[in-house]
Picture: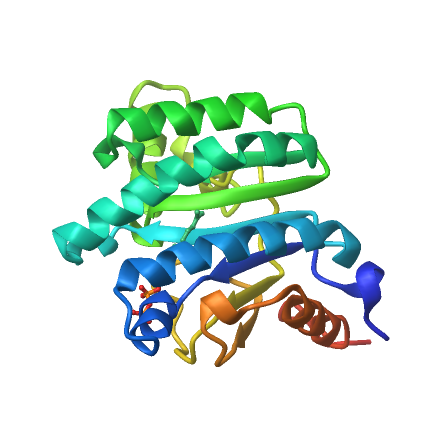
Length: 239
Ligand code: FPP
């Protein structure tokens, strides 16, 4: 395989890490790094069609991120609200469909309203599918899915004997999305931090040193090309 859009990943998922260190290296507060990181999101979303990436999923806020200082958490929530209001038009005109995954219950009402509006406004788009993980944790998602599955068993809607590998994904937040082909984590950490645990069982991983605010479309293109050269066997032996 030679790479290129045809052989490249269809679904790329990104753990956008390193905003804090990027800001600290410039003697600025951590939120400065998050703002710089938010600007990168647009560039990366826009380059997806040329790379053959139909689905992009980004990790914006984890269920563990509440442990950060109140100032940082409030700043991030305000950044998400601003990002959604500001980017709504651009995303709609670029034919991007936006979805959110994660547990909305702990988020503030205003933010939930904006998320709902953005999902509604972009519901007919289909060029790029952007999924934003917000208050998301893989274990939390599996637990919430299991709860709903158990409710369906209890109410007689689901026969427990019929439960197999295909059943649980139907209850996950990502039920309408294909599994990610390539998961990228920036900033030099080789961890998956509770991101898309079930869905990434057969994904390829790229851990790169670049801090998220320095990540570019060119780097994504290079990683997609590298992916095109790989031999994915999904546990089978190549014949
Ligand atoms: C991790 O960097 C980044 C986050 C917890 C937030 C990610 C948010 C953005 C990129 C901003 C906007 C996103 C959207 C969708 C508008 P870190 O703070 O852990 O960095 P560090 O490891 O250097 O401290």
